[in-house]
Image (cartoon, rainbow, N blue to C red; front, side, top):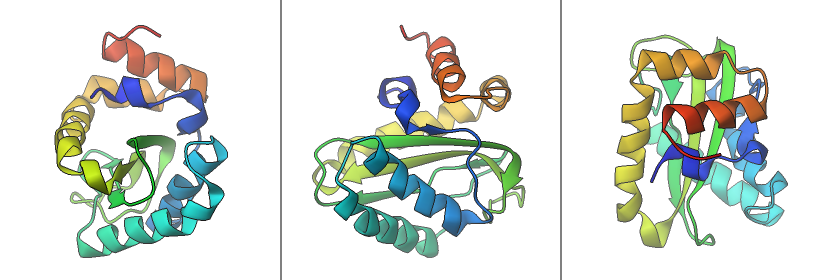
Length: 156
């Protein structure tokens, strides 16, 4: 599944305001509820699942990317969130750089294995410097969605 198929402007935060990875994770848990993707009552469960996953091993990758993700009960479809912060958020990434592109994935526990490929596809897409640069030039959610559609050849 392409990231451009998952991200809508309601699921984009530009800039993602967070002093550290824990605040970024909290924002990622709240954004889908504000967008109506799951009930507000599920936010603490999502945040806790993301924190537990993050504590087991950092989801901060290289090149300013973090992909916090967790599988939970209570949702039927994969939810993705895009947060951009050109200044960067301390995230304990593998290369020590701050995370400037944060993709949050909230995965239905019943479909966890099916979305391992989605996670790999997103990591592969963001490994491209041109994609990272294009996203970091976006100043609002509409521009970010448009950029994703263009780099993935998807209709908007």
